[in-house]
Length: 113
Image 1 (cartoon, rainbow, N blue to C red):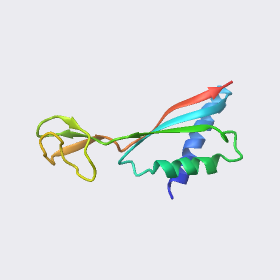
Image 2: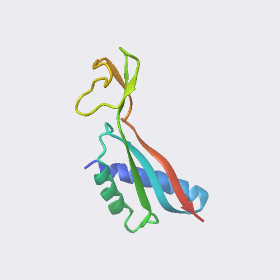
Image 3: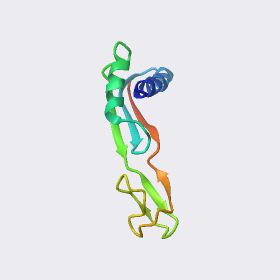
């Protein structure tokens, strides 16, 4: 379960932010792309386990799921494919490039002084 190591890295990053601001973390928001390879539910559980007994214990983890977005090289339109199909929803071409949906991003950290 690689989500535990991802949660630990996220916690480390957030703790650095909190230490710099001399504040307590109350909430964290992340976005997870549907092709990122990260299971949102497993990350949520891993976060709860990894924060137990730390200053982040009790902090809320808000996870936003981001769908994959394709750019079609044939018709030049953007679409969100219905998985497992990797084709343009407009023209049916498979000559597409994924332009979003692979990332996991830390969106925000809510702090309390």
